[in-house]
Image 1 (cartoon, rainbow, N blue to C red):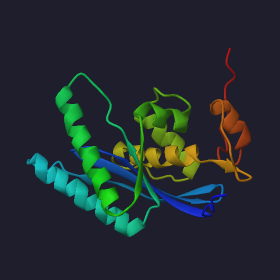
Image 2 (image 1 turned 180 degrees about the horizontal axis):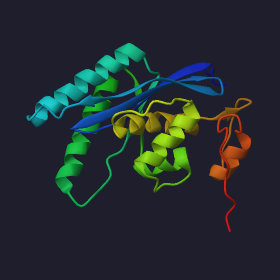
Image 3 (image 1 turned 120 degrees about the horizontal axis):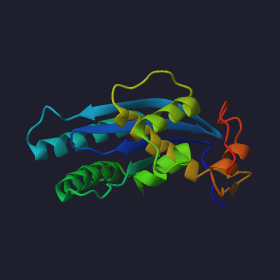
Image 4 (image 1 turned 90 degrees about the vertical axis):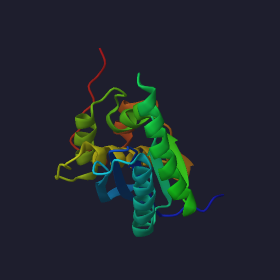
Amino acid sequence: MLNEKKERVIMGIDPGTAVMGYGVILEKGNKTELISLGVVKMTHLDDPFLKLQRIFEKTVVLIDQYKPDVLAIEAPFYGKNIQVLLKLGRAQGIAIAAALSRNISVTEYSPRKIKQSITGNGNATKEQVASMLQRLLNFKETPEFLDATDGLAVAMCHSFQKITSGGKSKTYSGWESFVSDNKTKVKGLTVKAKK
């Protein structure tokens, strides 16, 4: 049987070439605490390679500061503009390389999976995700950039994938079953019955 750690630090990253959002959480048993969230801005840089260098360097600094056990990262989504996809893919790859340079394991999640795990709705807005995270992690401050809460959402999504109960993995058929089993984690929330 695997010897599971009682505590685990998860860093989540929402990659971007203008603004990269990040969030760091601490799992203590079945409780999750917010450690930090923020953004790395690259809007002042014109050279795309300098932006990639900044992503790498800042990701390494964050890893060295918070010492995460794992890095969770949002996958680039395909839109109509292939150039945007290419830029996001490069930003994501550089952040992954930074984690791997520090021997940190990496897990990737689609934007839809992240929104689904946080709000129960894969089409949720950034504002809805941020609001739910404020409730789940009990913080009041509204970050200047929603990229910060997007990074935090990636970390929480990873945390939700590893929920255990009595040493055995617990899977849920949907948001409603998770809420009913985790009333202390989702205080004040109600799930509307489907018609």
